Length: 82
Image (cartoon, rainbow, N blue to C red; front, side, top):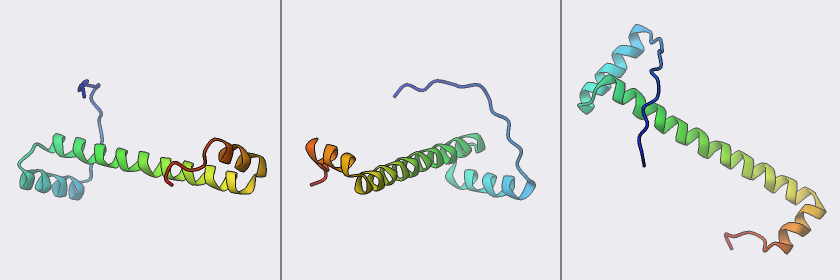
């Protein structure tokens, strides 16, 4: 995966949160900025997975409640998990 540097982002941290983050970064042996990037990346991946799950559940509810959608789904081969 190619890493592309984006423009800097400015965020405000209260003293307590900054201290907690600095301590965690020190414990991991990485700079504070790297810790924050790692945490944000993990959070973004989690949010993306949650969004996909919500969208999949919404489609499943629609298919289950709509006979024409259910027929089209069954015609197309049903679930791929079976």
